[in-house]
Amino acid sequence: MNIPVILGLLGRLLVVYACTMSIPLILALALEEVSRMAFLLSMFLTLITGIVFAWQAKLTDMKIGVREAFATVVGAWILAALFGALPFQFADVVPTYVDAVFETVSGLTTTGASVIPEVESLPQSILLWRSLTQWLGGMGIIVLFIVLLPKTDLGTVLLFNAEVPGPTHDRVMPRIRDTAITLWKIYLIFTAVCTILLWAAGMTFLDAVNNSFATIASGGFSTKNMGIMFYDSLAIEMIISFFMIIAGANFVIFLMVWQKKNFKPLRNVELIIYLLIIFVSTLVIAASLWSNVGESPLYALRHALFQVASIMTTTGFASANFDQWPSIAKIILFLLMFIGGSAGSTSGGIKVSRILLLAKTAWAELKRGIHPRAVSGIKLDGKVIGTETLNQVGIFFFLYIVTFAGASILIAGIGLKPFDAMSAVAATLGNVGPGFGFVGPTTTFAGLNLFGKVVLTFCMLLGRLEFFTLLIIFRREFWRRQKTW
Image (spheres, rainbow, N blue to C red):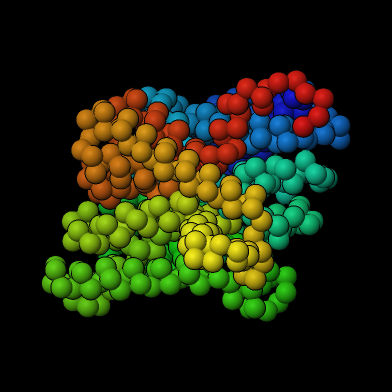
């Protein structure tokens, strides 16, 4: 393990991270908010620590191996959480540093679960920082760092693989830095267009910026206590619904459309299934609202579409109090928390591609039971999926369910009702945000005790880093001195 290399990379990441704090700092200075001192101090501490770390290694001498890549990614997310929490703590908007870390991790992992009940009383600069943490975490802080690296090599690919969600990344491996730059360009374009449309639809400019950051990152932090319900606007809901669905799709597809200048990449199996799940779920929930609650068909369809898009993409916005909806609607939304969006998106959850591969594997095993000698490979988009990838998908699913069960027991142990505890874990492990009951769309996570917040913070990190990257550093073999890796 090359510690100087890891410290050098983390140092440069912290320097970049400190620079991002200048954005809300400028706003705080312009509006003469008291939070300006909080950002100045946070930026100074982050920058100094980054410089001290970066001093440990020269960038040109950095040779990044597998262990260095994993340690750097995990270290980057932990340090981003710890230093990103400083503005909340110094601005005195949360009662404890644990709450500040919870809020920051919720932002960086694009979960959107908040411990701040009165967000409308926060300084505009703090609101912008909350949204900015989501926006940075959506595409990935490592992916941003790759863009800023002067050169790329195998180590850069390892860093990319260790952070980007999804079972495979084969199509983005060549020219990794160019790929990262293009992905960020697409991300910026979507954000800018979403901001302009929300501003035109009636939001203030700052609200439009904050909500577009949260939408494109599939984050869900809002500038209003009631969230999107505050606006009660069909135009705003439809704009956000559209961009949530965009954010939940695989950004590699948009990358290929960008590069090939045609729309053939949109004929993607995962994308089709993803959209089909949204369509069917919307119709079923709308029908339940119409028949059981007595809402008009258009009203039912409007809120069903928004909420399905929000939960499926793990954004976590709410246009209505879905905790009061019929049981069938709540069960569907609960299941959508597990499915999540597409691989390579800003969404959380298990991912549609993994669900597809699990289903195809199960079907192949059933066929093998009838025809033992039959040989049939598992394919996705015409490509045969290797046994190693299928094994990883199976292990990921196992870890997801075991973690969900274990964390649910722990959260139930602090006094929550069983379904409330399960929804809290599903919402944080899947990076969704709001759950049901105690942590429903009209409440916050502020009522949880210290232990509960720590457990759910760990769940958010596990969900965002997809288990392997975070758990692998706890293996003893990871830290052993080896001649080769």
